[in-house]
Image (cartoon, rainbow, N blue to C red):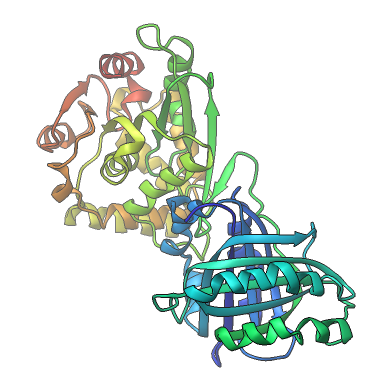
Length: 488
């Protein structure tokens, strides 16, 4: 598929469909998620003017159909929110078709109050005659109908419920835009369908479907807070992109309960001092759930966390990064990103993490969730930061910084993130990884330094950071930067 086109979706709600929930979902989530994409030029909902089935349709003008095969679009269906899944499960039918633009007559820069959509299947042998009739007679006569605005003709490239036409046939769609007050059914309209040529063509049409639609609503693009990307299932990714646009991009991914500011000092050095004379552009972001956990979002798992980064990079028009660097939960994300999206990074760095959940760890996370629910996030933050930092640094400014981050984290988002940490196992993918990697661990981070040296990831080295625990960049910045410099 390529070139300009048209996406048309016809929906018939079922007996179990909640009408209010259906419209709320469609108007505030489904359509707005699509219209914010730069290649979706327009998006509108229509209601069947004859009260026939299907009752509703949504139509989108697409600048180039090739975008509909790319992940930035296909993920809309692959990563549906829980609310979307629930609403769609009640439909009687959903018929989704894609058409390429063939011709256009007239001009209509605004949504058409009324649309007449006529779909006809013709044999390949009759297509030229069919096109000649439309272009040389029919559209000219339609344009004389009072209220006519525009006529567009399309050819199907992706079939819906009934699939593509059989071999040797083509499905042609004509969409005619009219004002609310129009002459449809009047003398000019009757004349357009009662010519000798029209009757001759009618004998060659294999099948025909005619629907009249009244405009219901124009979608607004999904509103996103400043410096925030909202994923297809409603998770917020607050980001900060800094540095010279011409520099290679390095992405940093946080641990659970922390935000993008754990990397402040590292980011500052990479942007100002650089490595061996090379400075870097730095992208940092808060993983899903740190400050907001939408009820419609899917359960947090590491595949979603890796794909969140993919989506953020796509939205920021960053095709490839020099490196993805993560710590703890972010370290697992960096490894999984290299597994799932190897073309989008040159290197990865994973700090103080494991490659699979353990039963003992799962029990610990359950206890921490209970602590947060019973005594609050502040109590959880104290216990967590004491565990993260080595004793000499418990009262350091960076420990206080991490304490404030953890205390400010969203409780439900934290609980969701622990679900990821309790349900992952990357071991089967490690031996086939090709992206060069660096594993880093603070030497005071329990058994992790020993465990990380046994991951068995090809083309990967390990560095231990002295006088540091779970967040080595916050306890021994100089040694951490030295480890990075030798790898980047």
